[in-house]
Every structure is written in C-alpha cells, then in structure tokens.
Image (cartoon, rainbow, N blue to C red; front, side):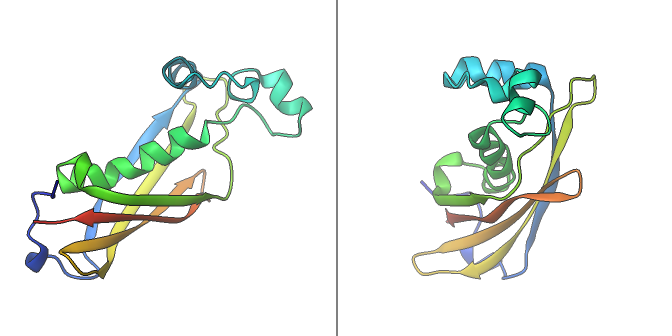
Length: 142
C-alpha cells in the first residue's frame, strides 16, 4: 500500500505534525490485556522498584506503537509503513496518579529513497528524556 502523499511533493526536512500521548496505569492494564504481556514491571509498583526500576514502566512495544502513530497519521495509511525500528534508550515511567506520563513525538522526513519511499526520523521523549533512539520508519508514498 502507499500513503496518500505524493513523493514528488515531499522534501527532506518536511516536519510531520507533532503529537503527545498520555499514558496512565489504566492504559498499561488495557495494553497488557490486549498484548498478553502481564510482566509485573508494568503494573506492580513494589515489584518494579524491587528489580531496580524507579516505578512502573510502560511496555516498550506500547511506546514504540504510540510513536509510529505520528507517521501513520501523516501517511494516512498504516500499511504504507514498510519498515520501522527503534532502540529503547530510557523507560517511560508511569506514576500512579491521575496524570500519568506523557509521550511526546515529533518527526521529519530525513531522506528520500528509491521506489518512492521516504525515511522518517522520530524524536520520542517523556519528561524531557529521549525514550526511543534511532526511531525510524520507511514509508511508501504515492
């Protein structure tokens, strides 16, 4: 599938609309149910602290999925993302309060590739710290 964006109209440096995604403990419980990942570091504060974490942390795959939403929203078609990869650099710590955490994502077209594809580089931060490194998606454009 291809995005609804014309390859010839996109320039290197084009910025995608930034987004912020709230994450609460409720979000993590729902994700655990959907993914089947019930590791207690994602819901049990006592356990998370005992294993050396500052508090409960979001699932890495959840964080990764939230980040790529900036790309899929821009492309207009999730099937247009033909490659996606990240490095996990810091955990998203989710406090047990009404606010939780906020994942902030920005992206820009970093390269135009062959076959009408572009590489989009993402910056993903939470609480001022980069939580995903080398976050890159390759998108097939029209």
